[in-house]
Image (cartoon, rainbow, N blue to C red):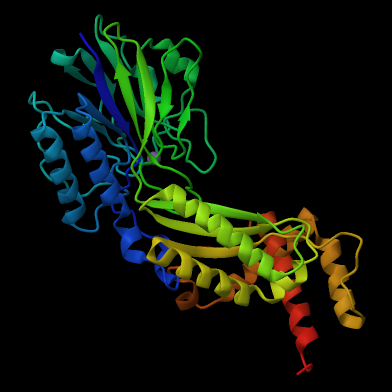
Amino acid sequence: MTLRRILHAADIHLDSPLQKLGTYEHAPVQRIRNASRRALENMVRLAIDQSVDLVVIAGDLYDGDWPDQNTGLFFVAQAGKLVKAGIPIVVIRGNHDAANVMTSSLPLPKNPDGSDIMMRSDAVDLRRFESIGIAVHGRSFRTRAESENLAADYPTPLNGMFNLGLLHTSLTGAEGHAPYAPCTPAQLADKRYDYWALGHVHARGHHGFEGAAPVVFSGNIQGRHVRETGPKGCVIVEVDGRNQCTHSFHELDVVRWQNCEIDVSAMHHLDEVVDAYQASLAHSLDQVGDRLLVMRVGLTGIASLHDQLHQHSNQLAASLRAIALSHGGDRTWLEGLKIHTAPPSGKPTIGLDGPMASLAAVVAQLRGDDAANELVGQELRSLVKKLPPEVTAGSTPLPLDDPQWIGELIESSAADVIGRLQTEGTD
Ligand SMILES: [Mn+2]
């Protein structure tokens, strides 16, 4: 057996909805909406260009039940291209597209050897590709919340074959990911397979032990929001004649989400913030090629500019957008501006007296006091409950449990109120 190549992808979330993106002004909604389809097309093109021998998709191919048949038809067309090129595909269902989540289905093409693309969910399934010496062991999720250790039932490896385990799992848990099909890297290593192709965790990562089979999350092929930053894509596994393998990452994304953090500690004018953004934007545009660059700008540091930033945040955001438009055109979109700065400590806010000084003092007291932030969170929660449903419907719930978010809210509200009171009556 000579060199063989396997393309490992996961978490395609085809036609994933845009959540609250539609509510943003100037958002390039269409390009972001189509990004998962374009990234899947890139994956199929890569598989064919590199003449891979097999494609495996480790769950969450779909984001959930299809809004209409077009989502399913799009995958059928892409799978058809692979099969026509002689490349077999093996797919398992994850929590998002578990057997009991999907209410409709379409007939999928058969693999070149006549086998099914989708693996069963009632037991561990096997695809044995004799001509390339590769065996795939995998099992689909039956239900959205698989709490069992699915890996436990995976069988012993087949002799003389390259054995690949295909699994949708959170392993021992990952921040921001539901704890489904839990198992440990040691349990996977004990199976003595040659490679574990995992899905579910959207950040790329390697969890194998030194000298043992790689245990790899390929991550999703396209970032879906500002918390999924940086290059996204798939892994290509190269297997040699002795069934030893190496693996490498390949970018597939068409929209690149990025955080642009600017430390404003040493700055004294808002213009300096704009200049720093411009420099960072130029650098990032160089890196992303012809992708759409979506940036969130975050300002940090203990800054003498703190009050000014809050008081003129709308003006500043507009200036940054102007820079984005004039330097990036339709290649970039500024998703938002977040101010996370703190005022210099021990230095009372200049020129304040009376009620404004009291307000500044209260904010100084609240700063870093998690118990107080929690109390403010509770107050806000009861206020939010009183809002009429037409105000809250369709919007993302506020993170009222997050003391850090509350802290930032207090900080920016206080700076805003003080700013408004100071400018009142001066013109
Ligand atoms: Mn998942």
